[in-house]
Image 1 (cartoon, helix red, strand yellow):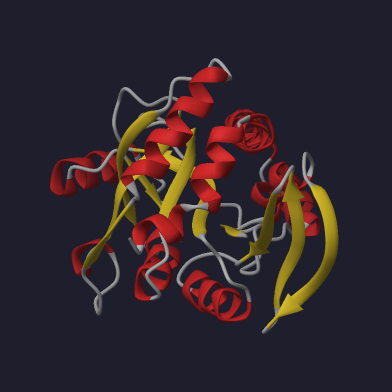
Image 2 (cartoon, rainbow, N blue to C red):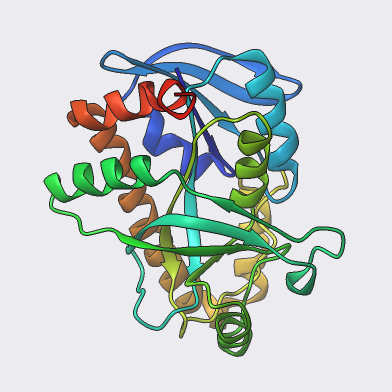
Length: 262
């Protein structure tokens, strides 16, 4: 069994659509669904946004015997070469007291064999994935200037809000880990905060409607953001499809923990 963690419902759904679904329930308040991709069993969890992902991951891993852990979702690009829709396999995920978390500095490494298996599976689907580093931050990075600062200061190519916390929980248990992220906004893209996302990873559409009424002149920005998010979700669907189509990737994920114990 593998464990898949995503912060938001829009990031979970691409992994549910191609899977054979089993029971849905909650583990310590976090929604989980049992599923399978061919012969590969999976538990898929919506963690909510930010550091709560560590609690969600710990709760699920204490309940289910996982051979590998995936953190999946969208990300902000801070490297100018990474545009919307670019798929990133993270060879390292960092958090820093200088990037928003004043009580934590650390790095979690992506499992090298899982990275290679995922890269090959995606290439078979016609997708060239970038292997790069991610910085986990405590807030949405909205401005072009801040993206440039984070790139210069830390040297990572993308930013997101959960992968370090999921990776840390996996590393503490000796479970191989891989973060797979799809860029939804590029280094040169402004992100508009509309406060429509709830902490549990669901969308408050009434807030979106209210924001639209109050900001009719900015609807073009929202439309552009929606297009970029759609590109990100499309990339996640490619990853999920690779789980269905690639026996080599499924075997690598299923055997990861046993291999790491040799």
